[in-house]
Image (cartoon, rainbow, N blue to C red; front, side, top):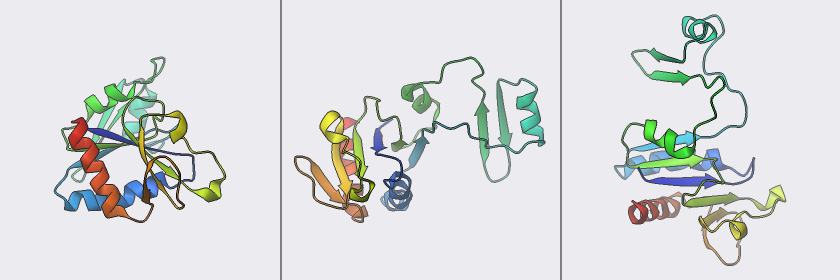
Length: 164
């Protein structure tokens, strides 16, 4: 599947940008999925609920199904974390996968950068970063205003069409 990474420092606005892009890309008739990498131990289940109890008892995977959604939880236990390709392969078919995180993976990327964070840009050290969405002009790279969702959406469609 066609993937595009949304990378940047914590607090740069990656999640907010994706949240704004999803309805725009959907209006273009695209089916978009998201993979979010976190370095924290997250819980999608509630302690004491049946599916939580199944995981605690040692289930390798628990699939919870409701009339509104389903969630598959895969416990790694002593296994190494899967790489991005393995995770993308688990997704249902879609037109585009936006990837938040995995900044070291070898896929095309858009950097989100804000001057107020005071952090260096990532693009000078990563040739896979094809453009930056920023709040100020930056030298030597294709750039988009953080609020120009239509232009960023066109860029994503262009990259995914070219790389797909």
